[in-house]
Length: 397
Ligand code: NAP
Ligand code: MG
Image (cartoon, rainbow, N blue to C red; front, side, top):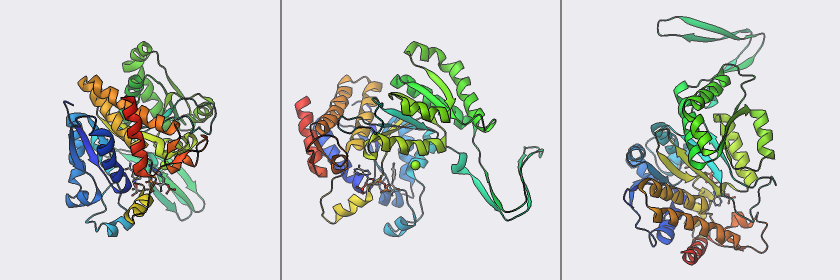
C-alpha cells in the first residue's frame, strides 16, 4: 500500500471485531498501511472529541477511510463513561466535514433470501443527510390564532404565507433545506451511480410539495442535464425521477440492482425497510461518498452493545462481522483503485468471496442461522466464525 487508509477505531463489540479482523484476516496477508485514529468513546472524551475532527481532516488528505461503529452518547452513556460533555454523533461530525451522502447496500448471499422474491440484486439506498424534519422547529398551538411563515431578508424585507387560521388547538412545524446541500447530494448520487454502473432513481412528493420537494427534483434534473447526461449515456445507465408512491411500488416489483436516492426522512424509513426485507441489518454495508471524491466505509449497524456486555462477562457471543469486514474490503479496494495496486483490489475481492462462501457452505453466526433457508447450518461463535472465514480465504488464495 502506497497511501495509508484512515483507520477509525470504535466501540464495544465492533471494537472487538475490529481487532480480530485485523489480526486474522488482514495483517497476515497484506502490508496494511493505516493512519490510526481512536474514536472509541474514552479517547473521544480525553481529546474533547478533537480526534473525530482530526480523523475527518485526515480523510480529506488521503481520500479513503474505514470506520468502526461508535457510540453516540446519550444520558446513560454520560454516567457509564463519565463524559465531560454529551458529544455529538461522530458520523454527524464526519459527515458535516466531508459533506457527503451515505449509500447503504445489502450483501447478498444464497441461503439468506430476501422477503421479496423478485429481488435478485442489491438495492442501494442513498439518503440525503441534511435538514428537513431533522432540523425542524415545532410549536404546539394552544388555541385560536393565525400561524404564518415569515422570511426576513438581509435588508429587513418580509415575505409571508399563512400556514393556518386556527380555530382551536393544533401543531405546526417549520423545516428547511439548502440548495448547496441538495446540489452536493445530487452530485454524490450521480458520481456513485457512474462509479458502480447502476441506474439512479430519485423520488420525492413534488405533486403535493410544489416548492419544497419540487426544488429537489429541479436541482437533480438541472445537474443531470448539465454535467452527467453524456456520462450516463456512455456508461449505459439511466437516471429517472418518479413520485415516491410510484417508486415504492416499482421497488417492490423490481429485480434490484439500482440506486434509490431519497430525501432525509424517506431514506431513514426506507433503509430500515430494505435492510429487513433483504434479511438482516448485520449484512448492510454503508459508504459515505463526498462530492469532492472522499470515501468513508463502515457497517450500517451499531456497536452491538448487548453482545459486548455478554463478552465482558466472559460469555460466548455470536456477533456477525460481515458488514465490518466489507467496510475494510470496500476501503482497501478503493485504495487499490486510486493507487493502481491490482493485488490489493484482488485481495479485497477474495476476502469478500471468502465471507460469502463460508456462509453458503453452511457456517454462520447466530443472527443468520436463525433466518437461513440452508439445511442444518452450523452456528459459530464470534471468534470461530472469523477463523472459518480465514480457512476459506486460504483455500481461495
Ligand atoms: P446495534 O448495535 O445495531 O444492535 C442492535 C441489535 O441488532 C443487536 O442487539 C443485535 O440483536 C442486532 N445486531 C446488530 N448488529 C449485529 C451483528 N453484527 N451481529 C449480530 N447481531 C447484530 O444497535 P444498538 O444496540 O441500538 O446500538 C448500540 C450503540 O451503537 C449505540 O450506542 C448507538 O449510538 C451506536 N450506533 C452506532 C452506529 C454507527 O457508528 N454507525 C450506528 C447505529 C448505532 P440481538 O441483540 O437480538 O442479537
Ligand atoms: Mg431509521
